[in-house]
Every structure is written in structure tokens, then in C-alpha cells.
Amino acid sequence: MNASAETSAEERLRRIELVTDTSLAHLDVHDLLDEALARVREVLGADMAAVLMLDPGGEELIATGSVGIEDEVQRGVRVPVGGEFASAVLGADHAVVFGRGDDVMVSGFLQRKGIRALAGAPMVSGGDAVGVLCVGTFDDREFADEDVELLRFAADRMASISQVGSSRAERIAATVLQHSLLPSRLPQVEGLSMDGRYLAGADHGIGGDWYDVFELPSGRVGIVIGDVVGHGLLAAVVMGRLRSALRAYALDEDDPARVLHKLDRKVAHFEPDAMATVAFALYEPETASLEISLAGHIPPVLTTPEASGELTKVPVDPPVGVAVSPRERRSTTIDLPEGSVLCLFTDGLVERRKQPIDTGLEALCEAVERAPAHSVCTSVMERLVKSASPSDDVTLLVLSRCA
Image (cartoon, rainbow, N blue to C red; front, side):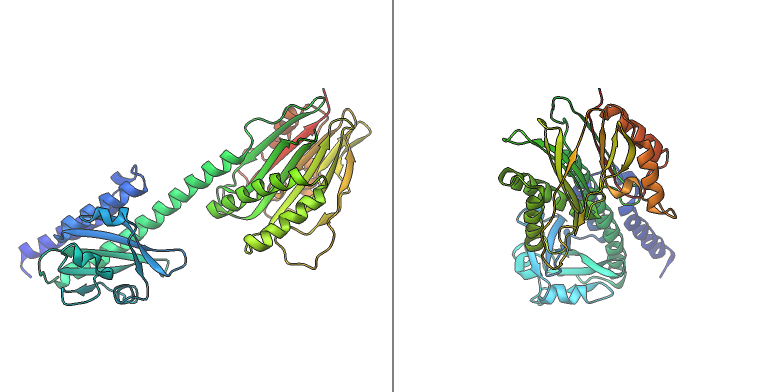
């Protein structure tokens, strides 16, 4: 290779590297993908470039982004993984070149577009194929070895873009979903103040924690706090489903244990891989008492005029979604005399690395003072969360009968 050819090859490689240029960081997922594909098409001198991502089940490649054949993405073109094109590319550790005589033109849709030469390379992330990058031309071009190597290199870059973009999109979606399902304003209940806090964990971002308070036709008030096992968008989606289902069951059942029993059946049937701890209570304003049932959840802390903060003696039944021998779930009545405070929480508030959970529970019991709910929330968060962000989600809900 002469000096001019070497310079040209180096320049093309440099331009391929620019598909992950930091100047693109401000773009959203789709714009980022389109811009990167445009650069790949230009560098390789192709007429079209497209990314097809594996679906979650790993059974199909889905057209996710393209330049030159944009309408195919809008139509949601899907290519079976078992087909010749997908199996040839996904099973290779290099780029694969196809000509017009090959009957593997992505189920024929590229042939209908007039593509006569096609090359595809697997997009690999973490050792697993996540999709395919392909480029094509309208003439009978033969892709040179240099083109094939550049395409493979570009596919590695595109895999990184796709995974980063997907992670970014998932975080945004999970955050929006999480906060949309947290109550913006709690009901006004005579003689009772309520306040809540939610803080996403530093290690995993948004998770499946939630709290909810809602009025029922009977005049009672439903009070919920829960924690779906897992983090990210999937946990947030499951949380949203459980929240809605529990509200519906609470309209038909006046026993918290029965509500959680129905919720458990729903999870077992429709969410077989999910598990959650849930505390559900029904507050009766006339008697200032509540019935509560715990599904794997830590009992709330109660402070009264006669006693400082301590864990209530509420029996804990299995979490929802755990396959165990069926048994009756239990409800327990807790009286809230004037001047008392009840604190419900998820384990992220009291669990810390290299620290027994009992230490966190003792600190919480000491932090729950007899004061209005807003003040109690502020005090508890300041004393238990401090300046460092917790590794897990923190959710706190306080009911106070203090003026």
C-alpha cells in the first residue's frame, strides 16, 4: 500500500471512530443513531445503512434506525433470526458480504428497494450479539477487505451507541414513570397530617419503591408502601401495575389481608418473575385506628404519648409473588391516639453496607419524634440518609396526630 492509500485508510478509520464523537452526546437516542448511521454510510460510500436490533426474546431483528431506507424503520420491518441473513451475520465474528445472487436480502425488502450489494456485521456488547449493522449499494459493488474491516469496527461502535442510548432511554422512562405514580398531593384527613419522601438509590437509579394514599367510598383511607424487587424500567413498570391493581382490589375488599391475597394471586399469574414486599392499611378517621397487613414488609414504627418510637408488633406474612403453601394473610388493628406518629418505610431507609439492619432500625425509632408529619419526614431523612446518597431506594410515609 502506498503512502496515499495508507493516509486514505487512516482517514476513513478516523471518521468511523467519530461515530461516537462526544459532540453527539447531546442528541437523543434516535437522533444519535441516525447521525452515526449517516457517518457510516458516508465513510463506506454506501447508499444505505441500517441497524437492526434483537428483540428481547432474541427471535427477531427489528429495524431500529436507517439512512437511505427510512420508511422501512417506520414500517417496523422484522427479520426472523432463523433466516439466512440473520443467522449468517449473528453467527459470525466478522462482517459478511452478500451479492445480488444471494437470496438472503433481509427477507427481500432490500431487494425491493433496489439494493444489489449488501454487507452486514454483528453488533456485540458484553460478549453477546445485540443486533446487526448493514450497509448496501444500488450497484453491483464488491466490498473490499478494507471495507469489511471498517464495517466490523463500525458495528462495535454502533453496539456501544445502542446500548448507551437504550440505557439512557430506560433511565429517563423509569424516572418519569416512577414520579408520575407517586402522589403529588396527599388527601386531607381531619385530625391527621401525612407526608412522604422518595429518594432514588445511588447504585441502581430508579427502582420499584412506591407509596400511595387514597380515599375510598366508605370514608376510609387506603395507605400503601411497597418495594418491587429489582431496579430500572422493568421494576418501575411492575410497580405501576401493582399500584393500580391494589387500588382496584381496595374498592371491593374492606380487609387489607384480603386485598394483599388478591394482589398475590395477580402477581403469581400475570407477573410470575416478580416479587414485592407491601404494607397495606385502611385508616378509619372516626376511630383514629387502622387495620394493616404486611406482605414481607418491615413493620412500621409507632411513637405515642406513652412510649417512644418502636416497631409495631404486626405479624409479617410472605411477600407477594413468592410461591409458598397458601395460608390466610392476617390483618392487625393499630390505634393512633392523639399525639402519636406512625412511620412506614422501605428497607433502603435502614439498611447500609457493613451495618446490621438492627442498627438502622434503632436509629429510625430514635428519629421518629412526636411532631407534624412534614417535620418528622425532614428529621428522619436528615438523620438516617445524611449527606451521602443511599445505595438503595428510600421511601418514607409518615402519619401524625400531633398538632
